[in-house]
Image 1 (cartoon, rainbow, N blue to C red):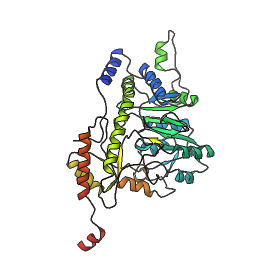
Image 2: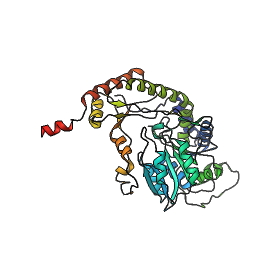
Image 3: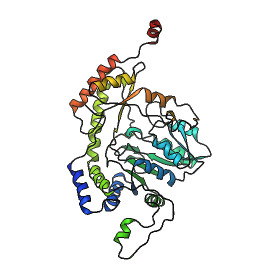
Image 4: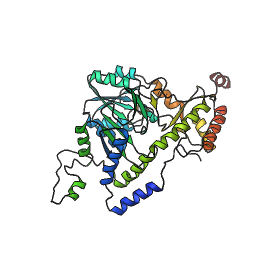
Length: 392
């Protein structure tokens, strides 16, 4: 079986975790602090705060930019359910807008139509690792004085042309950037997340909130030569990362440039092959973006049965995934009123397929995927409407 993804873990990560276990300090501690420093240096952010996962990162980011009951947050429906859930956990209301015509990220023109007097923030998603059009988004946000949170769950190692040069996603262009280290992501700590920001006050809030609102951290209390009693000035959460996860994350971060180079090479091989294949359209990378290609999503031409094609590929030992979900089509978010129709998002979910891509993938494995896909495309067209009518 060729899987859709595979974590890139090895002996160095195992040894790093073993050393933490031997140290006796396994919860949030010195390795978390070191991982935060490494991550801030890698991205170019002034501050990085590690948390338990990207969902908790999104929750804290939205709280940090001031989302409270009655506020609206503009975002895409075409993304993982956590985005809408965390807006609502802050008491806010998600306002869903459609994606761009030639990609899977938020459409800046649709975004502009959705701004209201209740808009507190824009939550943009660098979907599948592809950077959003941040220039257009920030022009609107700055004009309207709206906070910007970047959901970069999939985008560690991606780059965007900003100003006169290239910058890594994670050096904040808006207010806060959120990352995931889930096993489906480019680097992993099993579970885990990170927030980056250039705002020292917001970073201080994150550090307070992630540990129950505790005024004195465990590390500081245990290192003190005097008795210290903590207090709890604000309501907080248990969003801590463990030192074992952080130690693994530090090793993963060292691998990241090589991982991204390999993923980009594989994406280019897909692009060249798929240009010659009937029935599918490869994704487009803008000239101002360098994706880490966390996922490789192809669009199916009209008439191709998505589910039947995926089943045929699975029967031949190749995993795939349906196009990215839409929150407004799930029961958890279906009660959110839509201000606008979302035809591009709905078409993207139902007419696209994610192909296997991981750093350890060999050229032979990729050629197998391409061969199986080509065979499946030949046999998995839906019956034409006229044929159905004649059959009846």
